[in-house]
Image (cartoon, rainbow, N blue to C red):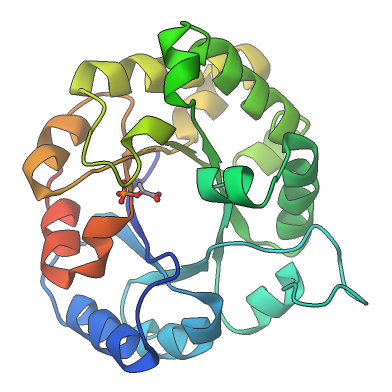
Length: 250
Ligand code: PEP
């Protein structure tokens, strides 16, 4: 059966000491150990954060990786480097990377390939902007993001991936997708997985919701049959809120 997961994307926030303090508070909290917790700090802190979490059940991710294997790519981090510091998860195609760094599905597919070659777990993000939803084009957009960035994978490879549905209009805005809106899209994504890979594989893949998820709405969102947890931005910068979200599965 697929895992329930709560992943905290710290984005470009926190000094070194704040990051160490935050992960320390999370490690020392009491949380539902049936839920996989993942912290995703800025890469520069990831090695130390991975050491701090190493005796806990908390896993570590980073927010981006290179589509190239190694070489003259100034400023980039390869999947093998990420693996070598004990980090297992990598965000791919977060909407902020798509918007501000012009990341296209075709590049994201290459990043996914590199990660899988090194045995890492991509958390592949998809989601529509407000205008696309208003034009009722959101199903097509999400389908396209998945088909171009992820559905080139074979049956084994896709089972090593996590999908995060993040409606861009809900990220950092305080506006959350309603529970019904989240379930509708998660069910749609699961259906695409069924069509491409069959029921058994589709049922084994965790699909996370992201977009202003917080302690006050997590229980309702996570109660949906196709919502397997959350990718949390702002609320993951508070250990108390992050843990409250992790404890929101019924
Ligand atoms: C995110 O950036 O992945 C996110 C979901 O942010 P927030 O929770 O702040 O909306």
